[in-house]
Structures are given as structure tokens and as C-alpha cells.
Amino acid sequence: MFETPESFKAWVNSQEWYQTIELLDGFYTAGKFPTENRLPWFDKYEFSGKTVLDIGCNSGQYSLYAKKRGASRVIGIDLDEARIYQAKTLAMNERADVEFYVHGLDNIEELGVFDVTICIAVVTEVENVLGALRKIRDATGVMAIIEMGLARPLFNVSRSKRWLKSDKSVSRRGRVSEMYRHKHAGWVMFPSLEIVKDIFGNEFDVQCEGRGLRYEKVVAYRR
Image (cartoon, rainbow, N blue to C red; front, side, top):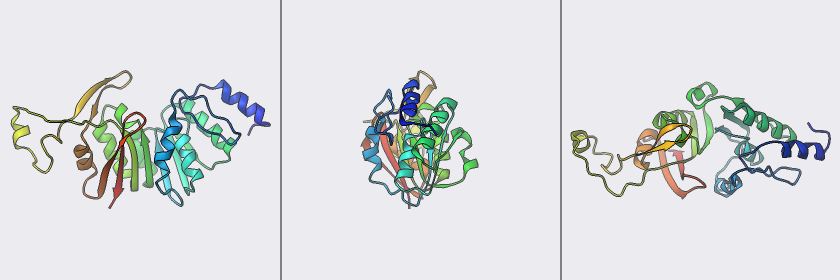
């Protein structure tokens, strides 16, 4: 805990931030991106009494938000040690009982199942997108809130026999995905919403709620 608001503000100003986080002391972290603009989207969801896992939490903005909204337990994970240090420091100053760990998406099953999972602009930046979605599905007890890239094909024509004869429960257009070269992750895939629905399966109702801050807003509700 910092001795004075001035010493805390000096520490905040000494850090490099990606997220723009409103703090109790009445000022914001100088984020590179207006991530606070996502909070009105989250306002419509119930966090009170829920357990929450924030995957790729960065400096902890959405973890801290969930706790302020009454979540019973919140865990934030990220592979970036510097971001986890920032998140832990903010939680201490904000007097927020939030757990932050350096931890990856690949082994989140170690953490258990949570009522709410949050994964913002992370799935789209890993090579194994479908595997990541399965991990999120298995960690979600009630609802997953995801911002990710989606393919939006108008049509698709292929000479492939697999395209012509494969599972008719997913439309041919819905089977289309898009590949993008990401500056850090290499080639990444934007699946269609139908593919995401197929990954989550019949136990979930998956909806796209429009354009988010960077990618599409996808919410999966357990039926």
C-alpha cells in the first residue's frame, strides 16, 4: 500500500499502460487504448455473487470491475509478468480482493470452472483459436464474454468434395473462416459464428452482439 495518494499517482505515472483504468483516487492510468469503453457492454451482465475468470487480464481492468460489481471471487490471468505486477499493485491500492496469476490459456483447466469467463481480444491472437475456444467453454459454468474476430462470409464456392459432402448441420457459408497475419502470433484464424456455436455445442446459446472495441462481441450462455 502506498503511503500517500501522491506516491501512488507517481507510481502510476511511472508505468507504461495499455488499459485505461479509472482508479479510486480520481484519476486514470494513461492507457494506449480506450479500454474503458467496453464497460458499458459489461454493465448488462450480472456479476453479483458470481465466480469470474478474466483470461488475458492485462493490468486487471475487467477483473477489478467484476469485483466492484459484487463478484464473490475473481481470478485474472496473463502471461505478461509486468502486467500481473501492475494488476496486483492496483488491486492492493483499490482494496480489491482479486487474485492475479501469471498463467496461460493452454492450462486453465487447472483453475477450475467459473460462473463467468471473460476473454477480451485474446482468442483472436493465438494460433490455435478453436482449441482456445474449447478451453473457455470447459471453464464456463454460466456465461462466457468474449471479444474476438469473426469471419463474415457472403458466399463461398469450393471444388473440394469435403466442402460439398460434409456435415449439413453447418451451412457451407458458415464453414468459412478467414486467416490473418498477426504481427506477434503469426497466422491466426477468424472463424464464423456458426463454427463458434459448433465448438460450444448444444449446451450453450452463442450470440454475436455486434462490433466491439476491436473485434466482435460474442456471448455464450449455458442453457
